[in-house]
Image (tube, rainbow, N blue to C red; front, side):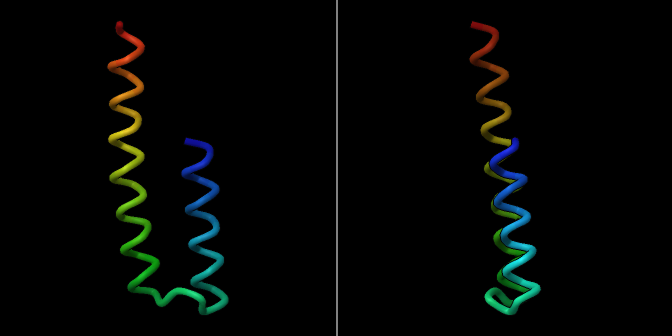
Length: 49
C-alpha cells in the first residue's frame, strides 16, 4: 500500500501544478484504488496458502 500512497500523492501534486486535469487525476486515482484493492485481495489469499 505504501507505493500506491506515494503514487496517489504524485497524482495530486501533478494536478496541482496542472500536469493532469482534475478529470484525468480523478480517473487515475480511481484506477489506482481499484488496482490496490485487487493486489490487497491477492496478497491476503496468498498468505492463506
